[in-house]
Amino acid sequence: MNQAPHSNQFALLGQRRFAPFFWTQFLGAANDNLFKFAFTVLVTYQLSVEWLPRAQAGMVIGAVFILPYVLFSATSGQLADKHDKTRLIRFIKSLEIAIMAIAAWGFFAVNVPALLACVLLMGLHSTLFGPVKYAYLPQQLSERELTGGNGMVEMGTFVAILLGNVAGGLLIATPGVGAQHVAIACLGLAVLGRLSAQAIPASPAADPGLKINWNPVSETWRNLKLAHEQLAVFRSLLGISWMWFFGAVFLSNFPAFAKDVLHGDEQVASLLLVVFSVGIGVGSLLCELISRRHVEIGPVPLGAIGMSVFAIDLYFASRGLAPASSLTLAQFLADHAHWRVLADLCLLALFAGLYSVPMYALIQLRAQPSHRARIIAANNILNAIFMIASSLLAGALLGQGLTIPQLFLVVGLANAVVAAYIFLIVPEYLLRFVAFVVSRLVYRFKVTGDEHIPTKGAAVLVCNHVSFIDAVLVMAASPRPIRFLMDHRIFALPLLGWLFKLGKAIPIAPQKEDPATYEAAFAQARAVLDDGELLCIFPEGGITRDGQLQPFKGGVMKLLEGRETLPVVPLALTDLWGSFFSRIERGEAMVRPFRRGLWSRVGLVASAPLVASEVSPELLQARVQDLLDRPC
Image (tube, rainbow, N blue to C red; front, side, top):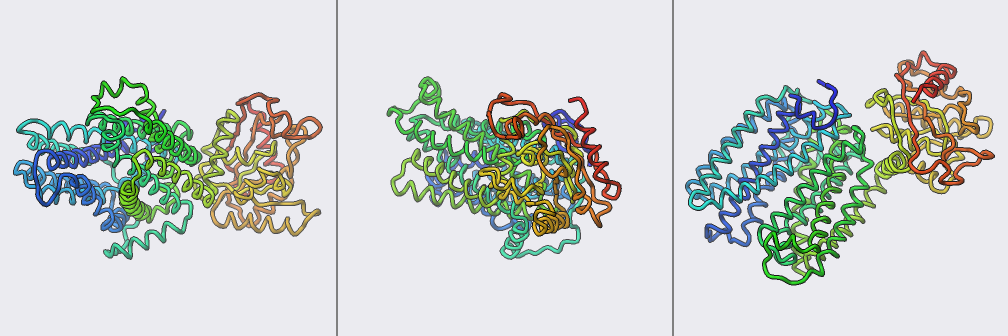
């Protein structure tokens, strides 16, 4: 894998391992939406089709497009794991040319059944491409690039959707020749997508010996069971599907919201889609910046909070608008009350981007490579089911007399409940959020040498102990979950103790004081390493009382017995002494909250791993002291 350094996620567009794939995905999404929207406008405004009523045309076209996701996602996931992904992409893009050739004939001949068949085939095209898309990225991008790469893809997808809808609407509206122009544009985009796919580098099969199960029901169930083996991955699938449920309520109701609530014309409805797409794009791109180029799920709760806050505020912003006749875009924008509505939509979408991109990156990073595409295929099925459920539930609530603003309020409140449930049953999200807040809002936290913290396999992290939140800061420096061996007395603290219990920290007591707890702690710690996880230990045995590094105890050697090749990574927390959470003034901690001011600078330095067979408490102490003595 080429992991050439780059300054930010946009630099990936200059690299062959990403750029051709990005443009292939972009052109495909644009073509999907240009074709679907143009066809919808054609049968809604320009034709009269007895068996396809105008009022239901958009819903029918959307349902036909999403049907293959339910039927064929399980098969497409298997194909993506069994075959070289680049070859599969090229085949899919060649299939797109054939589909668009039929669609071009359908537009020229104004043959509605042929065009509806092409909607089904384009749904199949997207179903085949979905697992390949998300399984390709972790093969080509490093862990430090994965969040940025996903952010670029999500941003590009929504921009392509927006441009496709706008272009489809404009082209089909061309007097006399609109259908022909759409036909040419669709075929041209398909050809460009195939040319772009030709430049995508090879991406070897993850499981070439896989035997295809053609039964979609049993395979879907099997894929969900595979995902459920890693609860963080499975519940991330549910979290992403909920985001599609949430977003579908807004996207599907934009036309009616613009007309019946905002009293605007078609251009106002288009503006809502533009604002929503821009918000998603900005939120997706922000993920790399705030995650510091790691797979960081800390922003997910922040995204969920923002989604609820601005969905609820959208209800208050839109419920009291004065009645008006059909407003033009200029008239709509002239009323300052409408700017609050637009701000709510944009920020709602921005936080949805912050919510979804880290989840996609976590699935790609944590899922087993041999069946990553099949898990993503299961996610696509769940997404489709949640979107269908969203349409049915929204229709039922509106049918019971709810207004569209009230529907937005209900969804915003439901999102808060669902998010709270997810974060309580998957404590990692809540813990990462706490670490995210502490390391970015309470402190200015700088990490140096984080590339030395292993992204795979078991390892022991050895760190100095300066404050009561050392574990939170170490957690913030690693993209992977870490289990901590911690002094049993810290668990008695009211809030921090609850958080550490939630994070499954292992309580340890001095051997002379409580030999049973001491032995149980090491038994749990060995089990963590046996499972291939990261374990962090503070060998000083307690928080320093004078700011100086204390002698390392021998317990770390007991932990390393029989693990001669295990990596041991020395870490040093810097500039924490004297902060609110460290001991100072007669040994007391957490007194005088602002004694160091707000947003004080602290850091963590990691050095290259040592091999367990070579270490000793004295050597580890010397390495940590050396890290502490380095100039910041």
